[in-house]
Amino acid sequence: MSEQSQGGSLIIFATFLVGLVLSQIPLPGIMIWARPEWVALVLIYWVMVLPHRVGLGSAFMMGVLLDLIRGSVMGLNALSLLIITYLVLLLYKRIRMFPLWQQSMMIMVLVGINQLLFFWMQGITGTSATGLIFLLPSLISAILWPWVYVILHGVRRTFRIE
Amino acid sequence: MYLSLLITPLQWLVDLPSRGADRLSDLFVDRATLIRDNEHLRSEALELHRKSQLMAALLEENRQLRDLLNATERLEADVMAAELIGVNPDPFLHEIILNRGFEDGLYIGQPVIDAGGIMGQVLSLAHYTSRVMLITDARTAVPVEVVRNGFRSIALGKGALGELELSHVPDTADIQEGDMLVTSGLGGRFPRGYPVAVVSEVIRDPGRPFTLVKATPAARLDRSRQLLLVDYRNSGPENRITRERQTPVESVTTEEPVESVDE
Image 1: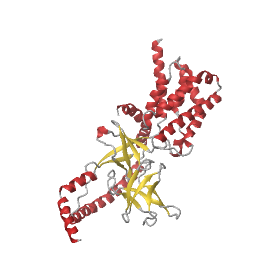
Image 2: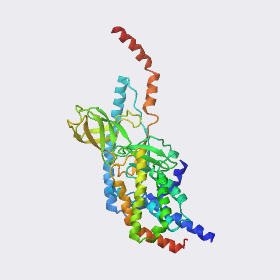
Image 3: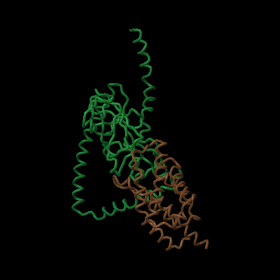
Image 4: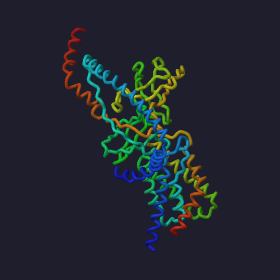
């Protein structure tokens, strides 16, 4: 039993790694504004379906890694991911019952909160954001959510992660 | 510092596909293209040889003239080649990641150039990678001068790729479209004389206190993969000042009282 849960953790970690890699792949020109928040999406999925295994600790770890990748002030991403994880932990029972399109709406709000917090805090440290274009990733993330959900659901079924 | 070591393999991993694609296109290149490339490179090498011969003569002449003027010699800076392995995913920060870190002897603030001109400066170091802030980043500024007449100004990054803005240019300044801006070396960060940008637009609006001057960076900020790191520590202005102080200070101090007596 313990062996299986160990394997499960590895798989979960692997999905996070894929998210981290996807979130630093260089995109051409204007596309850079439309990059979905892969790590947040993966995190929301795992917190939603396995709140007893993936929670604030994982959110903090992934946030610190994202901070390192983006070169932002240490802890900005960690804080914004912690806050949306907390919200998901409050709401997961409800979100699970939603149909996919309604989940997408929730994702848009959650990732939007993540973006707002991150760019506000980054504005405090020096680089201020102009316009509301930094909210575009939340829309893209919401559109991609059904596919992310189906793929991660498949992964979870295949490896029987409980 | 040690935490960034965690990220390094991830950054290599992200760069892997494009590296692989490069390797693959090297494999499948045909003979005709290679011959054409070779010819092109040969003629370019010939041209550069010719220029470097001229350069040697000019250098010697320059040295003699500087001797005549009693000026200190300008030092050649050491350079190191580096390769771009990543771009910061955050669209508000114009940063790139290089495959050299402090294990290779880099230091913070080191100037980075490409074939076109100044790219930026090293912002932070990890063991095997470093983060470079491009000159278009909103947090950075480069002291520049116009090649044509030596007019000095400061080129500010605006956070938009392919655009710089000169700050506080008076309406009477002699600056026009197409002027080449090079580093003036005044800030002590960038060595003197490297191309920075070409003036693309000059707007003299009577309603504004200053002339608005826009410029396009000379370096290919979003395309260059092969970069050079210039070691400017030993030839920086602080060192030059200390070297100057060692000898000609007495002559200066003796001259001053004489002048005041005359007045």
